[in-house]
Length: 387
Image (cartoon, rainbow, N blue to C red):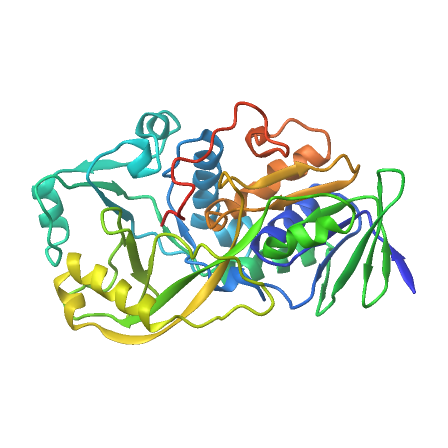
């Protein structure tokens, strides 16, 4: 059996869903999304799902700000509830250098990102449960927050379906077909899809998928642990996201009773995305708890409530790979987000679809082309995932 499609999107995580949604809005014809699990069935579901425009390059800032704007009006723009909670974001740091902050304040300001610099006295007033030392500063971003990654993905996917997109859940892609340097089809365990355009949104499986048509993507899969804690009584319900750049740990609420916390970064050994250990080790948990206790008094009596490990599709320079790749006409990529993908996801589908349709996108994505343009610099925080 076989069928025809104008575009096949591989992966139904948040990036596959946003591409499908924007393809449908743009009238791209018959679009089929294929995923071996289902909508938000992979790494997306474990995302911290935080949005804050702290970056050193304009495209990230623009995309995150646009994503926040969309989430603020999600029911009107997309439809449904993405679980977005806009409570602000506080980064604690010793200085505002790009290397320490992972962001350029002048660039952020020029692009309209709202922030406030907090000195020691202001920090102590803002977070009375925390302990600070004399050289520490705070960066407060009021228009920041977190969403529910599963709800965000599902509502994008359902909005795409309402516009005619087909989502084949529980369908395994077994190979891509290319002829004369041109995509010609996608083989699945359900049937063959004849198509001339594929968008690779397969996250940690993206490199394996591309290798099948001779395209090498420098993507490695690494893991990082997250712990859950019962919310201490001293921490008010409705607190902002706390991101401690000094101890390299963050936490945010999951709900009124539970916090999630993680170290910045990921383990430095590769894992198989199909068989990796999804638990968190006692060593990771104890180290995380110790670093939380260094900052927050109430976390010294924290009650552990479980944990898990997530995986990241990492590139050497920590930038995603976006665009037509490998000299194969019709082979597009939106992958390799290196742990920073959710914040831009809602908005990035639109400029990607503009590129696919030969239009000039509102956000310049050339920084993320592969091979990289000479102007692309490694992210200052490429060795660890910023929270």
